[in-house]
Image 1 (cartoon, rainbow, N blue to C red):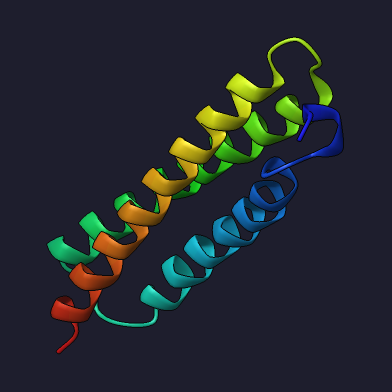
Image 2: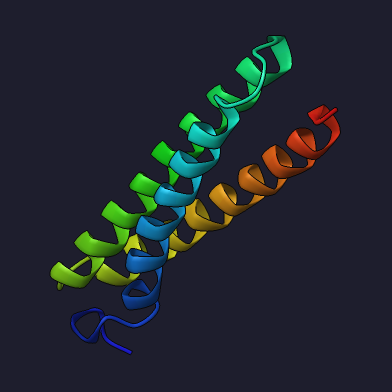
Length: 100
């Protein structure tokens, strides 16, 4: 696919935006319980993860708008998105073991 038709970027962009919302929701729900050192680590992990998903969304958007380097940016967007998913999964496991 050509970058002008969207390709994978057309899927990464809205999904990254959704994942930013997921990170924010989990952070908000976490504030309902007691605060401890592990909760602070999880909050920071989720905040960084939201920024990673933002970077993925931006790379995907720019790749759809760029004719010259669109495919390269789309590939970077995909790699950054997968890294964001991996960090989110790590955060989920950490959160699961932090619950009492």
